[in-house]
Length: 300
Length: 107
Image (cartoon, rainbow over all chains, first blue to last red; front, side, top):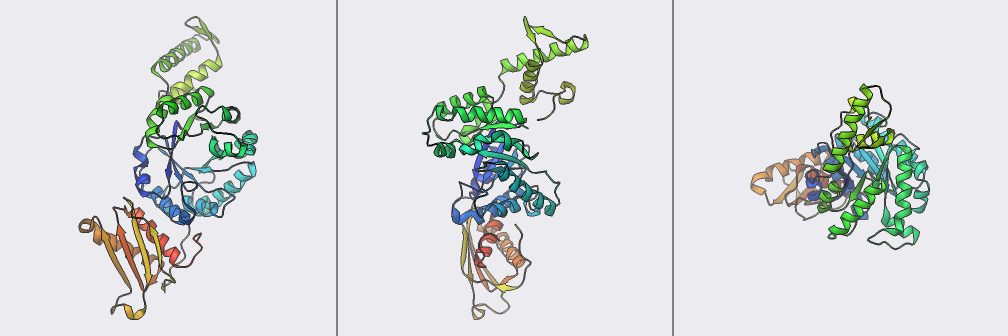
């Protein structure tokens, strides 16, 4: 599943909810948490439930950021977005302020109960853990591996910086350790790593720089808070023509070597081994040019 | 979210949900005394829409459908519509009904 761009859409804004599916993001995050005023939580929940039922999202992943488990709202959020009244419902729940495996367990249990009630398969709704506290970062690997529902770790730098007493900067030195920790934990757990959004809406130059940094570090995609960020982040997280050509060359050489019964082979004078083949296949996968069965790379 | 089984009842208090933003609608509910209703009337619906000519009747029908599903009577519904889709209109009506019932908004 591609998660190059995960676009936040305010859960109580019908205009933005309706336009969400045509904005080009790989995933839409219908937000019931920070984007919704306390007095409007009930109305937003109903609106998102109805939007999930009505909107044609195609291949776009439908994610809902519920309220945190430290609020009185999260349980009703889960019930609403899994219920029959939500049609196909949410594919993924983004759990904010996730700090421990116990937070995941609580929501996973509620999801199981609601899936059963709605006649959906147990475990159908995936979880993304939003790590935005020092404790959450410290527990990253434990959170990523505590439930089969967890499909990714998602870094939330704004709340994290507040928790750390750090000052947010455009260049992000203050979150370098957290970024690295999230990527390593996610890769070790074989789940996605999603980078924090860039929050200055009109600074597209620094947005691109920030997205490139995340991609170089190993993130699989980035959260975005503005529709105008989608095109840039999609481009940054898509393989370039040069990368695709290199990957195609590696794949062709691998197929020749396999046919000839060779274990190791070289391309353009460089030795090619397993990790390089895997990287090439991942590039082709992201570019949508992979025949998964023939190339032997499973969906992760 | 589970909706309580409908029982015919008047609403407890006035309520409101939605907004006057584009693509939204503002729904307000007001309790009516029995003597304020015309003969045979259980629910009164008033619609003011930017697409009144095209969709006014459909908006009213949706409002009556939602109220019937909750079993509500003796109520005046005012809808100021700014181009809301049916799914938005239903969400706003349901929010207003739940708020009018005196629930804690977590029903």
